[in-house]
Amino acid sequence: MELAPAAPHLSLVDASRVEAPDANGLSVLVKYMMPRIPGFSQTVKRQALVRPEGMAGAVVGGFYSLVSSGYPTRAFADPLEALAWLGRPENEARALMNELNDLVMQLMGQSPLLGELHRVLRYRLVDANLADIARELGMPERTLQRRLREAGTARRPETSKVRLTPEGRR
Image (cartoon, rainbow, N blue to C red):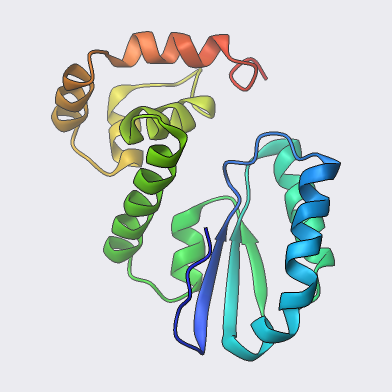
């Protein structure tokens, strides 16, 4: 989703949900980016890329570095670090990421809470304790438990679901 902010601006590219980049997807991105780079160079002051972990992150980060720009860019695995580099305070960054995650999950037809929980669990399957997960999701444990109950589930069944997906078995 591309927003049309006022120029000049700071930019966040969130590619953290890329699970397995493919040649066709990268080709589409190149076709989209190439004619826009001169305009971006005039309007973007600084850009942070949020990349996924693992091999997908290496591919996305490497590909992104090939797209030349006339402004400083930096890749991050943690969206809050990316937003801090862009000068956003932590509370504003958390709110912005929550809003972005909700929009993406709605577009994907998935509960925003469960989508975020699954994202966190993919990297915490071994040490998936409720306190750490709630902290990473930016809410108290009791709130997380209540919201999961309202969604008709709990942490353990969701952890099992993630373990059964290809991403969870890495």
